Image (tube, rainbow, N blue to C red; front, side):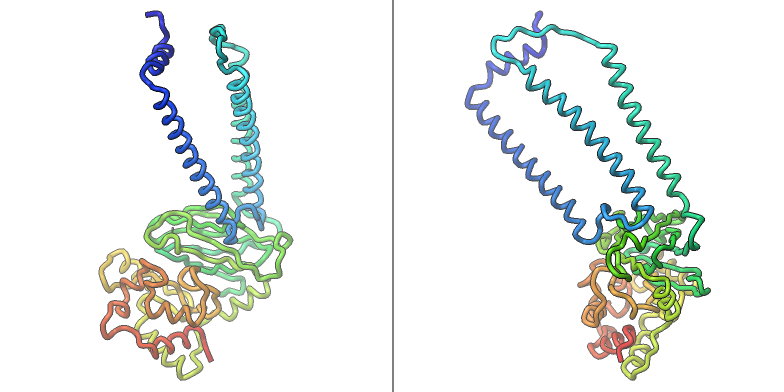
Length: 397
Ligand code: CUA
């Protein structure tokens, strides 16, 4: 009796632990610290490695990303200051007041009202200040600016595992539906309505704005803009986007591009939007093949008919082996840079590979599992048929 629990525990362990045991304990602690340090270094390298793919949030190219980056920097540096200060005082106290041999037990005190009040007020002010800054930034970014050029509106629908972009009116009255590549005019606010037609996805173009969830049956609104004075290269410039919410098997392969262009280039792209012309014998044969095998899921002659989209969606939700599913609109495929939701360059060779066996390029995709062509047997495409389809889709002459 009379001994503090700490002292009792301490005296027990000093009796039971032999010196060699204490040594091996220290060694294993050292080992686990080395492992922990290695792990943290790996995580750091892995996390910073993302910026090499053009996905850096530190390179803000428009007002929304810039404001968010500013808030992030304020939060980051305030927290770094608090961390350094608190850890500094802690380390100082640990080293300066450590137990030395022969030193008497220091006086035991409890409570210091002034210190406690100070240490309550400082964090409260800090948290309130940063909270208010965050809320004001949110309000600030709620709507695009009302001065300057009109906003261009785009409806974005996420599907497992690709993005659909619909421009209800590109400005000249043209209605466009395309996939996986969003084209936007520079220096113009882009307003986006985000929705999903299956599971929850998330829309993210790091250089233009933060992430926003894409939710079935609920529309989320956001806007961003790409500023010409923040872009160093000559236009058009291609930015990277990625689904940022785990959404199933091919989540990591659900990417997209945002191409920032001059208004004039954007207008000529919009004006040229239309089905591939099928000018050669090869392309005509491809067109026929496409009509016979692909139109259940893919549209190639302009915006998708809403009734058809609805029936594809219900086919997808019903499931089963051979049912239609929502699939990328291919009307402007020949003007795109990438294939299969931004996972590879759109070249003749890659398109051939994709048509031969989509599963090789993008495991889990619904074309492999639902289209008759990929169920094996006589329905499979021959090399000649693949050539014809490629000639048609890419308008090769
Ligand atoms: Cu869609 Cu992750």
